[in-house]
Image (cartoon, rainbow, N blue to C red; front, side):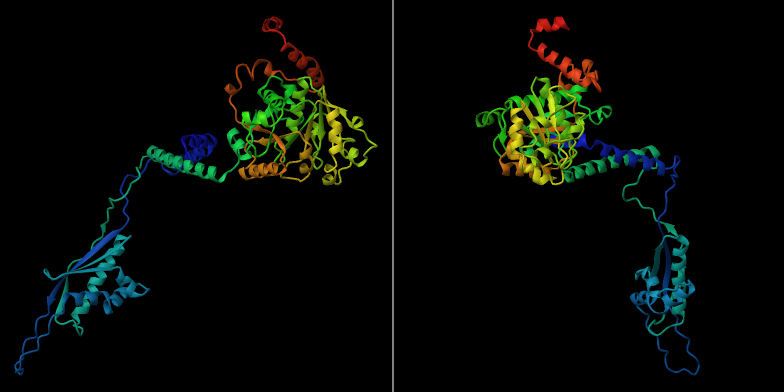
Length: 514
């Protein structure tokens, strides 16, 4: 991963990092009291009882006894330790301590150490409760003394005496990292940990999330150039049926669609799968001319396809071209709503009544001067069979307009569009930033390459933009003027052509007019 990729992840996932940092800091701040007990907490206690090993004195001879008494040999230190941890001593200790489990488990927690030099034995035990640890060690010591006082077989002449009873001693742990008790320091450390967790989570999400957001990602995945970018709309501009090229003609959004219009009028198209560098494309194909059919599609629904058709139509009309919009998305037609045109006789009626309905009879004016539309029609029961018979309509449309914009179904949602692709002179793929995945984009590129259609490029919608990216003066001044409702037609007829005519005047004349 390069530094550029890491910075891109930070810009896209900064909220994940910030959220993890704030949550960790807030949780630690709430969990830590303002005044912390600074006394050292004790985790466990150790208790040790010390026994001395002695020898039982031989019995004195009686007057009748003529032979010397038999002297028993003292048991070894190892055998004495074995007696303490097994047999009767653990059973007696368990009974004295009211221990109901197996006595062997109780004895397993003992550490019996012998010292032959000093003839001593230590019994050590550890527990979280100091009193419990001392009780276990002392009980085993007393039961061991009592056991050897009885002179059991095999114990020899050994006797035990308690030199020192066990007392609980706290275990002080100095190893490991100790969290400072101060509330502010703990909060800062928690924030640092949250920051690291947020970075790791951001990298993981970026690895799992294959959605395309930037211009370069879209171009690489679709294997086609991005002809224009339209920045993300403000919430106030996200109204249904709003054509921003008309309502806000000097905004960055309208300028984005004008850039797409310019690319479609002057840049050459290319067959998917070929080299689309400027030198190769200029030789391989001809630029889009008047009377050409431009098909607008997308990979999925709700990517801004119909909205882009409406704004592109207004942009072409702004340049003085006759525009005809064909609403060929017969499964979910909605292009007519963008132009304030009710649904009526249209494409489906033309196809089903071939010869009885002429194209000029179903071409309807719109709210945008210079733009006409042919709606989807009223007979939409079998859209797949209708789209396969659109070739005559396309030829008629080419004769009645300078530019024909065809709004089709999404490529990956329905097969209808594949019947129309060979009829188009250029194809534009609308991509909404953050919605199309890399796998879906590769599938679109594969389908377009299989049909060998001529692709103009992709139109990226809703990308993040900066004001400086669009040059001096955009997004301010006249760009804030909004044209609404019934003023759309007058704005197109009066204001926009006037600006086009002004563009042909010398700079001095234009400045004087302003």
